[in-house]
Length: 97
Image: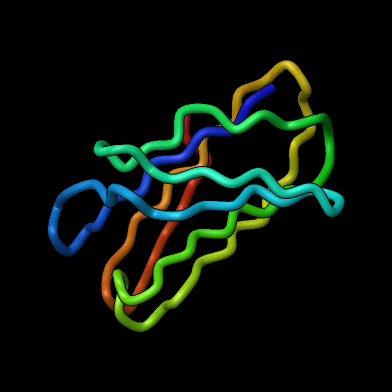
């Protein structure tokens, strides 16, 4: 089972490279950084439970210094893709494929 993400700046219409991301679960933390296409292709997960993706935006998104997305893993065989779309005063996410 893996988790991936893709961060896009909706106001500029482009990916967000070099963004620090943490995946947290039961006290364990995995850190990564988005690539040139704004993606982290694979974050390993140990199993079912509630996970938190923490996006360290700093000054990149204006109003929000970080975004935290909590989600539940229920199928250990599945891949979970959690995109983040940013704009200066809003963000959105969804379960991708």
